[in-house]
Length: 518
Image (tube, rainbow, N blue to C red):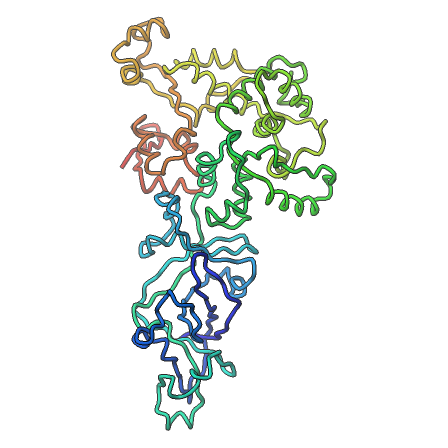
């Protein structure tokens, strides 16, 4: 038996329950020679049932409440879970059930409801799934030398303990008061780091519930409770996905100078906790980008927006003046921040505070703008585009002059897919009316054969689906894929893992690796 010490910590309340957990710190080299180990009768199932101690309707006032064993990972100490900023969650909310990413990291012997039982350590910004692990062993806990367990007076009498020796022998040996974890059906809870795709989870939740301008948004604290993750992980994910901040709740700290980095960090955390987040409606964002693209094409202050940059405040004012719809400054700034080229080590100001310097000159990402234009071109018609025709239209509509503003075909990854035979697509979308398609879009009836076409297939269209469903959708479009074409549709950190699970691969004569469905 591997034990060190047993001590009581502050009561840790599990949400929706009134259970109290003790923390058990285990070590080796416990000397049990010449010791009598005693166990409370209340630790035995038969005794508890006979005395009504398992009636959950009654308040738990017994001196030795049932134990629950929690196995901590090396990254945690018992003091971490006894701190005031740590908490346990048991969720009865069925809303997140069926999410394919929540159970992806759990072992095969884990309870099916394990993903709804969480331990959150706010001081370290960590979240753990508490996984029930069955065991055939019976665990007996006892304190280290010179320490005693807290028990009632009644429980300390010889008659109220089950002992490992006779009463006569116990007079010659020191008594160690222990605890039995469970008489039978033993289990313990194992902490496994929650590794679900939190960014995707938050994105989907915001899009489902908190679309601006029809919603007032949700706070970091609310998201932490709903999704059962630490506040730090929630904030990091919101920043990573560049979540939209509801303009009326965005608090400024413009009086703090940029060189006060430590003060900025402290204030940022406070602001984020009070800020409300949501998802900008697709229609409003699309209308805003249309105005921004027009401004980039016509405004003299944006002639070389990728190299010389633009004055941010002036750009926002021009966009607001040209808008025929009611736009808020925060909406325009949110869109612009998506394409601002950041200096190394700088964070986006949109995640918690506004720009301190209104006259700041910022460079805009020409590749980001090019992809926006590509989306607009594909949305202008449902039929696929012949590559030469698409490139011609792309160059014509792209804001900016010079070789730096000529879009590259690689930018279409994650936006569209290249196909050489468009006949099935035409028949699916237009029936058998191939002649009409050729007459409208091509000059030669055979021109659609063995020529590369581009079909609109944006990553945003499938990213909300499960990994398995995404692969089904991708292989429905194309039978085989190259790695770089698949990358935009998956989390890069898990790509190798999911490829092994859902695909097989082969090399062609040129040495290129192709991935196909299993």
